[in-house]
Length: 263
Image (cartoon, rainbow, N blue to C red; front, side, top):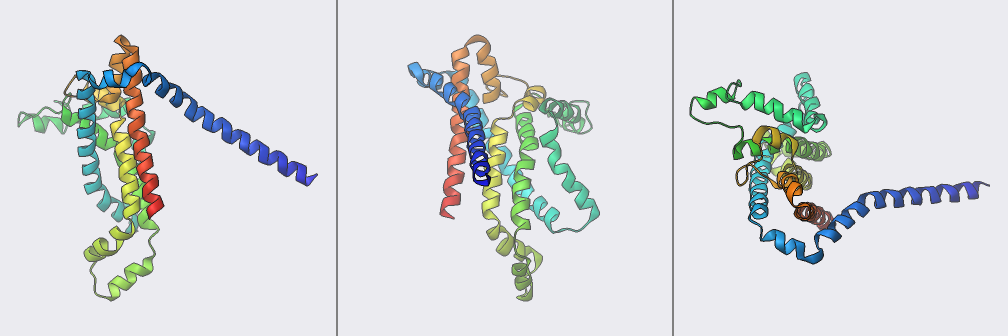
């Protein structure tokens, strides 16, 4: 009887696995099949709207994730190592950009960095307007990418054995040297993993970018925005653009998998 129950349970697990895989991969596979039929990909890459949106997405997302890495590593280290109650409250805010609707994020940034916003009005004194510019795209991408990077780096730093830092301290290494010579080398896989996830989130950002930066071709129209615009007039082109983003995301996953395999 117990053997039959165990077999039944195993079958249920495999069925749920098949359902999950089918639910995820079937729509993606169908989209890719339609995108790569009839040389749609080649035609899309020759379209100036596509090349402009792709170039802008790559440049802005790379700038955004670079800023996230530079700021995020020290922030993650402070949050991980500090016992301050204030820092613990700061830690709770990490998840906030994930749960907030992207449109709400866009409105919040528009209110903050707009011409009459508490930050934007100071930039206006120097003749700099942030909303509906490429800078706004980068800021929106930074906002949504931060939590993915911080979560990964924080996890990597928290898993480091404290004995290594104690040994470094006994050898005369100050906190700065322990950070560079112990923490960073031991958490580098988490840093790369977080950077890849954050970059993938940045390049796929849509809602906050649309509200805060607009949809201006060649200036703020990223790939997700170009997909929406082209699907209204050229559905096939929109499908191909979606396939390009899928391929980029898949490439990131493959690189991460290879990294984990060789380390």
